[in-house]
Length: 199
Image (cartoon, rainbow, N blue to C red; front, side):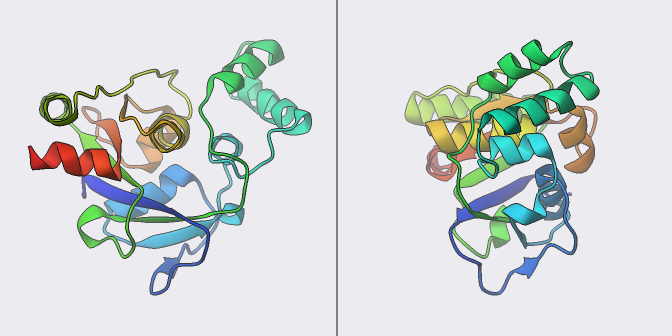
């Protein structure tokens, strides 16, 4: 299983990269990259409502917030609609717009990645985080709610803030991105990942 994948966010279709075979989740497509595949997905291909919200694929209007809040209550991720709406407001999100995502093993990324997602065990997480701090004086952020881990915490947050993120994952991302029980997620904007790996 590949432990480092690159995610690129484009405003055009990539050449020479396979389109995903079927619609699915953002974390499912990251799982395909962990299996060695390079694929692209448009906004229409991403089906998870929370991922669509976090990745800026759906307008953040009242109707969208109400729909996703209801889903969070249904998933038992929030006790009621008010809590769900407050939870949604705490998520980092990409600006609303059309975009294409490319998911690939980092070492074979067909396009320049914007983000590096690393699946690590705790000892490797410590090593990588220390390397990041030593090289850049940056620390990874670790705000997690066990929900929206790969789409919100480890994709939207680093892309919006330019900061690294660490997350234990969520049930969906752990399953779909094929995380072992002792693995967690580290996510770096590409420049930070390169800086940490040069030290």
